[in-house]
Length: 366
Ligand code: NAD
Image 1 (tube, rainbow, N blue to C red):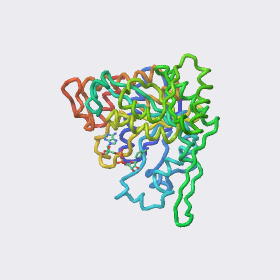
Image 2: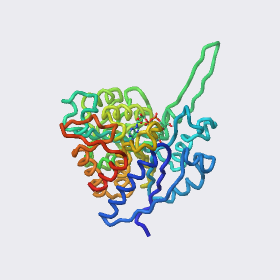
Image 3: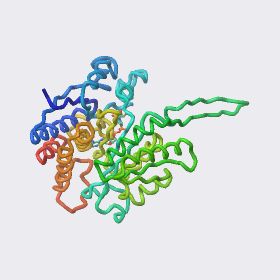
Image 4: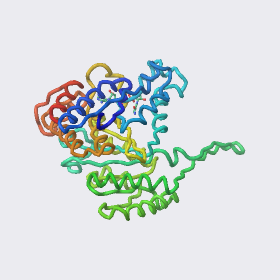
């Protein structure tokens, strides 16, 4: 029997290409460290529509639940040309993604924003702010808050009025705070909890519960930061952050800001976790239909998502370190896919490779 069962969702567009390379790297890790991974192929999104008529089936949910973790490429096609977008919204590829996140109760979204010194040119900030790179992780609550609260629009005496509500209970806050502190222990032992406690009741409760959780983690430094200040600090001094913990809407905005600061969409991993060790791991980018099937995609975001899977769901830290180091070495050696070809902070001669060659070179570097 395999040590771990890994769900594998190739998905659409560049998805199959990048997942193939991530699996190649995982297989090399398994070989080197004496593990065995069994892959369970799962259909989702457009690929599932083509095969079953639905973007997500009960079989796919059951298969995902039977795994220790799921690695995913990306979902979706070109909204203008793909027949999937002629279907009603609940039958389109993205409905499958939302459905599986809900079915698996994935409430914590993790998005690392890492600036590799080798790719510093992609960062829009001044050099002195980012020298040596930075490495932060945004943990965003994904199933509560403003996006899931009650809402309605009314009209009274010809005046339209819209209401959205932002609700959190202490259990929702506690479970994600625990995740953030656990993960900080695997990193640099610092949590910055972001809220708007000077104005919002939900933020005051957020702050109080995070402080209660912090008592169980005396080795982890906790600081609170108001969201407006955090938005400034991300572009002023990004190196100060380790784990940023925040609610749904603030996290939505801050995680996009943080990823823009790194500048390289093909490099950004992500994970969504529930309250067990299970997680769904996927690149932050989409299915890039414009370059699908051309061996041009950068597989690194997916390979780094596989590394996060080893670290956070399978507890294989040294194996995850091996992947992270391999990516770092390969970037230092000057190997680049097209999307990061202009990034040459170290003045090295660069070599342009395709998706499959990049995957093989990283696997060899493991
Ligand atoms: P996208 O991220 O797919 O592409 C944006 C641009 O970045 C494109 O020029 C693309 O070629 C490039 N790019 C993206 N990933 C790359 C990689 N790994 N290597 C090199 N270049 C890369 O965003 P989009 O074009 O807005 O969306 C395309 C499809 O993806 C849509 O159907 C959208 O709904 C879907 N999408 C899916 C997810 C997901 O699966 N979680 C996330 C975002 C978008």
